[in-house]
Image (cartoon, rainbow, N blue to C red; front, side):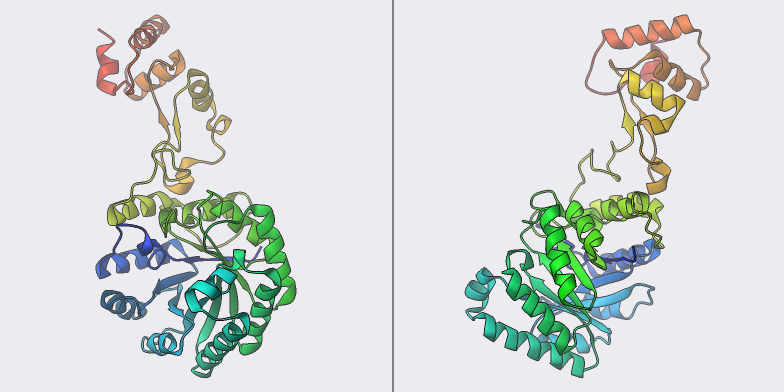
Length: 365
């Protein structure tokens, strides 16, 4: 499976409510993503605001392995704006659904095609590499979406992106949609999935299986409303389950997630898959006993793979094996009778928070 990831944290991620990155923070994000090994970084939409223009200017001058792409509308003015930064790639978007045509643009399908083709031709005449995104593609009439894709390819676009802008796709519908579009064009297909139904990652995987080449992701899944597919989820699953051999440093995923929490002010759930605080925390006595003997019993992959650590909680659910293991880690040798007595005390004094090391030592007295 030859695929790549495009990180949209700087653009889509900054569209999260209450989020605004400084230029220095954006530079830090770009450098971290480049170290991770991301293939594409969407560096922003300059027409939005002066601070984004300044950020795009600074980031466009950074030396990165990742290819940079500037975001813009399907207008000549946004193409001209992108040209000023010397970035080879531009990604333009245009709403293709009946709702978008009626309420955003007030035009029909024929007029939309004329505008799309004109802007793509203009951009290609200027020497830009171009990705065209059909915004709200998942609610666009399929026959028209295919016509748009074919006209976009003929006009010279290098890539075609299917955007599930309001997050309505399911994996089976995604499979059908990508399969139909791929059969109609020869340029690579991108997928952009929103997480309104909690299916963004599943839909991205379905798109890849159906033949998409690139998926948009963001750190911690940040983005409009419920965000988009999470970098950590998509990258780990592709590596661990589909054996994709891309040069991604999965061990940096936890660090990326924690840094983004600080920068964005948006915390992950404690039980967030892969990067959450509880992702490798074990509590039940039967579970912990098995994990201590062989972690694979209750872990499908090693926490070190994603920069995490295993945690065994001691509380009323605990068993003697977990208590003995914790005492051993504290270099305290106890007989089995003492371990049994401590475990009994813990179970007889239930509380919501785990027993700390100091409390465990106090149970010895």
